Length: 400
Image (cartoon, rainbow, N blue to C red; front, top):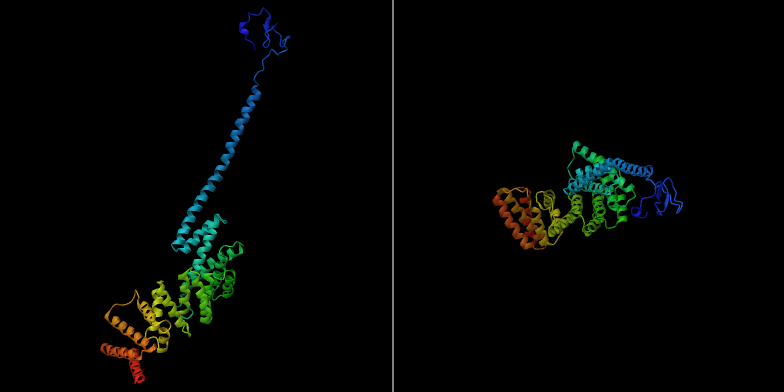
């Protein structure tokens, strides 16, 4: 519109066109000169209002929709946070060796998160550990479980069995060879505890087909062969392969010791001494129970000449005495004078026998004579004194 304020007032009954400033009748709604409508377009409240209402409605709808998600989102976030906390707890429990507790924690996680891979894998890991450290006495030992003890063991085996079976049936390859080997060993444990027949050797050999160097399958198969058939020559290579892997060395040693320590069949005693000798040289740990049992192979009151000779000649002479001294140590050994005297006699007896076994007859004779004097001084009687006297006579005749 032009600057109408500069124009003179229109005559009575007239007005200026809002577009071209020409005079037109006051009542005119259309300029006769430029044909411009003289009625200004009014803002349509209806249209504008509807637009605002629509916008406000959309915002309200968005807020309402989001509020509907708050509950589920909050619940998801809470469950996720609890899952992470429980996972951390289970992992810590496993690190501390609390495998049964960790098993239950992982199981709780899987109740709400059945596809949580960390929990699934973690539970498999602790299940394998539970099987590895599940103790049953040697078939040749005199240890017998109480009914209550067997019930607890049966309950644990029944509790963990489905985990291995589910792991294999899932079709996902997580430690498959390990799982198959442990499934075989689980069947072996059930045979011992529950007198159930199960596939043991077949599973162990199947695991070896999947992974020839698998430490668990090799160590377990070695023990299985010794426990069931005392096949030392067959078992030895499997133990050697397991050790060569460099993994789970303590577990492998436990399998070796447990399978041989109560086996009196030919060749087993010498192999056990060789294993103990290697453990000594490598600085590997050994339990007092195992140490004491192997040490008994040198003790004159419980072993005869042939058995002692087998133990002494299993390793080089200097290593034989070092291993004997290592085995003779015990945290539970007595320190009284009688015990100390007997230990001294026992060691001298072993030394004299070692000298004889290595062809040093003169040296052996002198050692036995000195030992004879010591025994007489201590007024010791029994098998040790008798064997020393017999050795003196035998060597005296042989040398003369």
